[in-house]
Length: 316
Picture 1: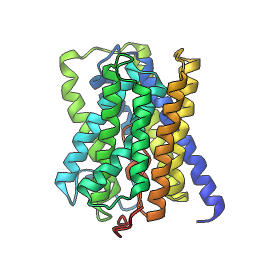
Picture 2: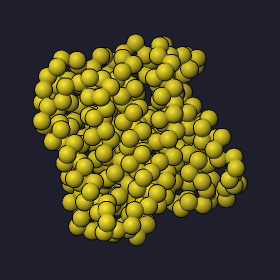
Picture 3: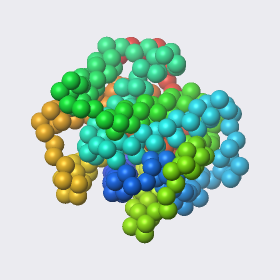
């Protein structure tokens, strides 16, 4: 890829993550007036508008449910729905900055799961990145010094679910069409959240419809931008741009939601983002793809190269 193409891809990635951040701010503006199941479901319904633009040449509508590995497809189906519920819960109860900090533990979870399920050999540097990430988490959470809420659990669960999705992408290999695994996540949210929202369904107000539309449509636009970004720049360059979401989180928190970021939070942000960046660097050295740590991991299918992850037992 030429330098101009790579630059174009990186700029598109920045735009994509800005759109994702605006999407998250939109669901936060609902302020818990709707259940997280309903918000996730209706957001996914609006997000379907972008689906035709995500299909690549040669893709067919039935490819959304076709798969070469049904167990992994179903795992992605359930993980995506749980991740969406966790992310909506986190953004509802926490400041955007705090929610993103915990969701950005995703690369740490990916490293651990890669060892357990993909049998990758991980060396001291990547384990060091994991340790740094969890130290940052302890600084942010400060257990014993502050009250923890369901929002913290939702954020961690959102990151964990996203990591499961990325492991699914890695394990299924290049024989699977990206649209299949992407669709597994969308269908999972529609089915599971659609069922769970029924007991507490409320008809949204006009204002809430606007926020829900922003939540779903902006996420769809972000996914489209990320797909085009992946066509111009390698995943190794796109990955670090995800951390621009932290800047948007701080700006939204200060200007819209009246949140404040204290020094322990700043320290935790630095450690966790540093941990993720270090992991990305080591993944690039080993030629192992690590898709961006999106809150719902939907973009992972759009930036994962159509090639097998490296299996050389390098230690880093």
